Length: 117
Image (cartoon, rainbow, N blue to C red):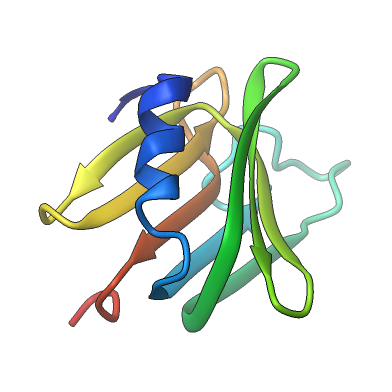
């Protein structure tokens, strides 16, 4: 993975507008993150292969990272704290947010085919 390049990632998102896609969205401050200790409250979210179609995509700077938003017919899907990106398997956009130690905090994976198939 490499640091997010806003124009390149925005173009990748734009290329997926109005297409049926599958997303993986995961957040954690648990096992992967460095701030898990007795004082921290563990939270997380996980969704895999949710089928969506979005009409608008936005990637905006949000503090030290980025926020990606996908506008669906009924609302928005978004992930914030994103820091890195790559194209996986030639057709899957993978965005991730890592902490200062490189541990995963958030991931947004978008593909035209089901993920992990």
